[in-house]
Structures are given as structure tokens and as C-alpha cells.
Length: 537
Image (cartoon, rainbow, N blue to C red; front, side, top):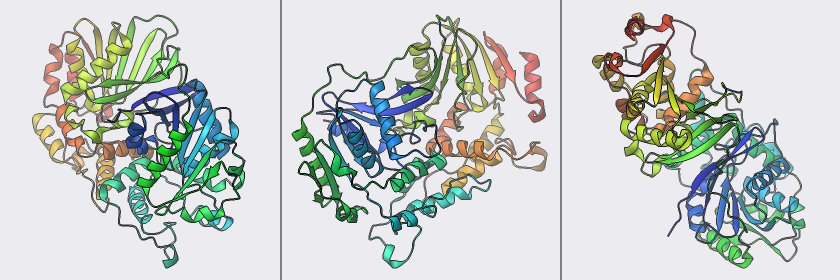
């Protein structure tokens, strides 16, 4: 029986580290390959958690972990960051398993802290030579920069499929051909999302591995080590480059992944390990003042939120809601007003709260389901504090649903550039949403991009006619990209979310509310209805 993994964040200085954990017993740390994140280990975490306390971080700059404050971290920097994370969790002893880039980091962790690391396991230990470093340089790792046309998305889809046909993907002569099947659409979609979530930072882990040139250091490990080489791994040829190894370091060849995990289980059983004297909390419940990141369970899955915690007791809180289909914004880590708790959640299915939604949480992305999730979030983190709500764009109905549930607790609702279409406009909006079902050639990526970019040029509930053209410059490319990534992650759920959260004629119900409602909008973008509504409130 598998054990469900849970997500958490820990703050180290100004940087947040995201990780997964499950189980009890001796601690096993699992490090992912580039450019993926700890999500790649979900099945293995829950299997190994029957016997171990499994901890799997997103390495710096990947997944939901912040990057290190340097242009290009080395393997030594990544190892030190992992030890800082273990220090924050008060982990004294562990085994470390890593794949590819994660495997090199695992070896370095053992070299850095032999008092902590009792066993090192690696799936594919890379030893690049100078020719490969030249080959796998800038051609293999070009910058990933959003372009106003969206062509970067088409390139990314093609590039990630190509790596199943040639290695490296950018060399297409016969000598580089691979005998792998074409990846299915779901696999390509998952690989695309791994890079879209981190952008140009995808190159950091690759470069750290390529630049690591101390090929003989693995022989200096003092603890038991297994360097596994699978016949179906592109790094199988690197086994012949290993230096002479002492008896406690073995490098077996294995036929496939099934044999790999059997060998991992055998090595862990031989290690045994020691259960920590103090159990690692499932989620650190930091009461420190300042910005934190919290994870709260709900019927919509795990909700990730930014939390500003005042440095003294508080009796007021503010909930800030971004628009549906739009990316949450990271707060600047400045000091908000004193003695107000601030909650800035990623809406269910969005941003960091989207994790795991391919496991069946779709039906909870209704207005009531999302309101229930956010109600639980506020109760868990704000208690009985008086609440104000700020809602952007299409989250107006969600904010009002929340306020209607807490009569006497919600003091006011501020709607910022709210979407308040008529019945006919709503029908236009829902009929003309992008088709985000993943397609073999990646066309859904461009659907997301075009819709997101052009909603800044025309109201998305109106036909794109000259009289509806919004004034001002072209939308910011970086912001369009962030929102398009959110749309691609939502996929086919986006249409249902919009149908739930953007009702028709909501404006007519606003004056009847018992709490204060305020509007904030740019008059230059208003067709007159918001100004007229403001006069009624």
C-alpha cells in the first residue's frame, strides 16, 4: 500500500525551498535530474515511504524552489544548498539517491558531509569529456526567452520531442540517432511544463553537470556507494570512464528501470540507516514574521499560498485573489502595513496549487469547490480575524461567494478591473475560449498564447472589432508568457473554471450586498459600465 506524499516549503534566508515527503524511519533524500523537479519521483516516493522517511526537494531554480543568488551555480553550490535545506529540517543522517544531475549532486553531498550521508545511490553517473562539453554547450542549451509571437513555445515542443530521436537533440547526423519510440503527447506535455515553470533557469542544472570536471572524485567517497548504469540510459557509455573504484563503491550494469528499483531496494536494505530521534514535521508551521509559503489541504487538492505574518498579534487579515487563468504574482518581499495578515493564494489548479491535478481533482474546480477551499485556507491561517478581500479580473464572483459565507467577518470587497459581462457577452466569451487539449504537434500552446495576448487588445467577452480595440501599447511579453503557462497547465479545465467563475450580469447583484464593495479600474479601459456601477455602490 502506497503512502501519499505531502508538499511543504522551508525558508532559508530570502529563498524558499519546496519539497515532498512521506513515510517514517531512516531518511532517504531523492534528487531529480535536469530540468525536472521532485514531481518526477511521485510514484517512487510513495513506494519507498513504506520503509523510509523520503524527502525529495526541488533543486534551486527548479519546480517551486527559488534559485540561488548567483548567475550559474556549480555542483558544489547545489550540494551546499541541499545541506542547508537538511540543516533547516534538522536531519542528522540520511541516504541520498540521485539521477543524472541529481546523481552528481548526491556524490558531492557525500564528499562534503560524510558524517551525514551514510549511503550514495546514483542512476546514471555522468562523466563528460571535453568533446561532449563542447557539443553540449550553447547549441544544446540555447536561451529560452519569450517572444511576442509565441514561437518560443513551438520551438520548445519540437525540441523536447527531438531528444527522443537524437542525442544531443541539436545534432542530427546518423551517429547521434536514438532507437527510442516517439514520445506520446502526455509525456511531451509533462516535459514542456517542467521547463515552462522555470523558464531560462532550465539551463542551470545542465550547465552545472557539464562543467563538473572532477571525474575521479567519486572514488574518494568513504561511505557505500552504488553507481547504477541502465542499458536503456543515454549515459550507459559513461560507465567505462569511471576511475578505479574501491571495494565499497560498485558500478553494476542493469537492463532496465525495473531492475534499477529492485537494486535500490536491496542497497537500502543493506544500509539499514537509523530513524531520526526527532520526527521531521510534515509541514513546518513557521510563526516567524515576514513572508512565508504555506501549503493547506483542501477538497481541491493542496493549496499553496504566500503568507505575510505580522510581528505581533493581529485581528485583521486581507485575502488577495488573482484572476482565473492568470498566473499568481510573487510578492515583493517588502513589509506590508503593520498588524495585518496577508494571504495571497495560488487559486486551485493554478501556479503552485496546480500540482497533482492530473490525479482526479478536476471536479472540485467549481465556484463552490474553490470557495470551500479558500474558506478552509482562511480559517486555518487567519482564524477569526476580520477579513477584507481584493479580487482581480474574473475572480469577482469568487470573492463575493466567499464574502457571502462570512456575514459579519468580511468588512469589504474590492474588485480590481472586474469582469462583469452580460449574458450575451458571457456566451461569446465561453464560445471563443482557446482549445487547450494537448495535441501531438503542440498547437494548443499557440492557442493559449494567442488568446492570452489578444485579451489585452480586446475585452475577451467581445468580438475583436475595431470599436472594441483597447488603447495602449502591446502587452508585456513576460506577463503574457506567465499567464499562458498558467493556461497551458490548466488545459481543458480552463473552460470549466471560466464557466463557473464568470457568471452573467453579476453587476446587477452588487448593490444588494450587505458589506462594502469598492471598484478599482482604469477609466481609459472602461466602456462606461464600471463608472455607472461605481455611482450605485
